[in-house]
Image 1 (cartoon, rainbow, N blue to C red):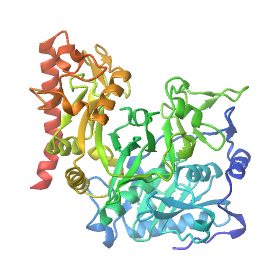
Image 2 (cartoon, rainbow, N blue to C red):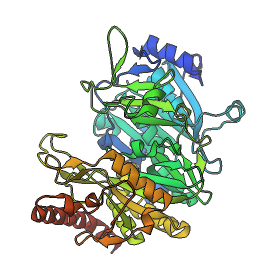
Image 3 (cartoon, helix red, strand yellow):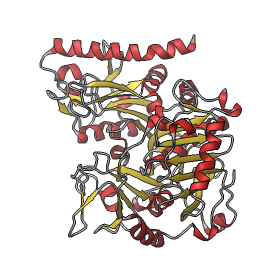
Image 4 (cartoon, helix red, strand yellow):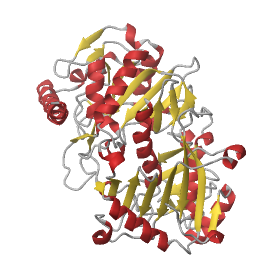
Length: 507
């Protein structure tokens, strides 16, 4: 499908400095004291999952899991594209050409077309930037068209609201409108890769990854707030990527060329690498700047808790470029258990790994959402349900095969609470969590003696270097042992209830 545009108003692959100038002139972005530009996204400060659709065309119909993805008819898509194309005919547009996927055997050439200059800068920093020779030969296989000021008509276009994120696999096109939240651009391409890569026998994964000095590779799966970015940012290891990866017969590779870090309460003391990466060329999203000094106030959540910073991965000093490595030796499933009952670390069998991968557990905290008065279990299949077009079993079976083939150790790590639930116990000490992960990475943990958790059946280490032994068994850290047993049984039942849907699917 071709766009009818006024070519004189289309800017192709502008340099960072020019995109910054145009974002300030046209979009009201501001230059912060660190050199990053700060932009606001208005009404929408996060993703809109209820407004995301996949076109139900013949090629995708039997592939897509329609239980978790919303269909849009081809006729509705064509009308939406027609109206969108008419809207942008005389508009100024910004184009970025690049890649998704650092492994050249599996990378996807993409084109991102934006109405806003700052969105195009975001795309430039988040995806993989081509060399001059690659750019000269670049032919996009998938295009994203992001036009925030075009709003859908639900009655005409089949959407639920004015906002839409629509993926058409047959026409290799993503349409985004009605929202200024830049994360939709990034996650739409991730969804595309989650559809395409498994067809090439590549497991696509929502995880961070790093590499040790001896070449060993670790993966960190986890939902928001579990420590995925923090724990993979290890000064003694090289960062492969912080969010999206593929695992092929060659090994692990980053899907992106940048990082999209949460920065609420960010400080140089706690997360120095991320703090220092926010420099000229970076994009701050919904971060409040001081009116006089233009200094970012990372503690200000007046616009949203979901403040973000986008920057190219080479802004991290120990980033691995190109972001390609061997097969994982150790895999961590991170969970922030607000019930306070899961062990700080436990070694999983292959079957347990499949169970916890399909469960994708963490917990919402009291006060984070209206009506939430005590911890609530949250399950997101494969730690990334909103971005999975295919059946969860596709990803789980591939992970199981790869774990077995490459003999990777898998650990469940509780970065949440100990000694009681949220409000009574306390958050797991980050230094202890890092020590446990280090012991797992070096192989020290696998040498120790393990004991079986009576309710969850998890293998808990009895000792771990630099970690007090009394915190390794969570029941021992509770003053009221009977209360622990009740809380643990409650969470175990929630796991079982959630998993019933997979048993029903397999029948």
